[in-house]
Image (cartoon, rainbow, N blue to C red; front, side, top):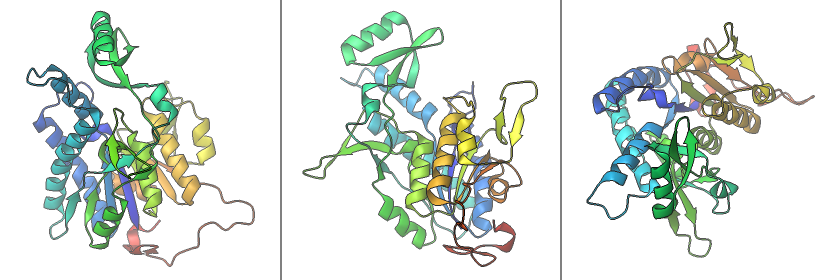
Length: 331
């Protein structure tokens, strides 16, 4: 099977942890074991990942660097995080998959310059600001800020991903047998000049889960795994007795009252992929990616076939649209 696995921010940093390199290396070490199990079971694998803490850290450093006349733009900082996180994943996976190529690819995501998100920035980034400092940054740098708890923070647009610029390169790498790490942080956001075709970076961030769903669909993936720090999607999350969902339809998933800043985008991405392709999406624990694929843990998302529609054509046991899979890993 061809699988796109999207790692949540917990793949590198837990809440409250210092963003030190050693801390992130430790978490990548644990994530690599789970991801390697998918490859060892005979599957093709594309990995994407979040970058919220990392791009925020770089933004704060850039803003405070006295050597700079202006901070680095967000698109360039996003590319830096792809390289930083990519090299950690490459090292760990190469050690666990001897003889298998593992490639990290700087990836650009095309967005629409007329996307309404540019008029309504709402994605928090960077550190906390006092109200006077927030007002100063709005005047001096044209920032938009919003209250986040007791402080203010910068907010930036989060436009919808429209296309993955490096999609042909990702396909070519998969054809060679490489594990591919791509579209980290949702991809470097760019807009294309319709007359010249030239790409220009924009001050925005693209949601990682939305990009993962688009990437999986455009790669004709058999499964999208959204791996995070919970075992399932829960109803009544935060209550004394939450309910764990094991199997759910896209429609039911969208009806749930899920946190907008955490589980909601994951649910929307999984629902979109399942609806558009008829293939499997799953939201499950980072430490058991194979279990999420097999349905022994996590929440499996599948669209119901229309009346009279038998759904996607059945494949021979142990096979997928992208070649043979290990018998124990067939879903």
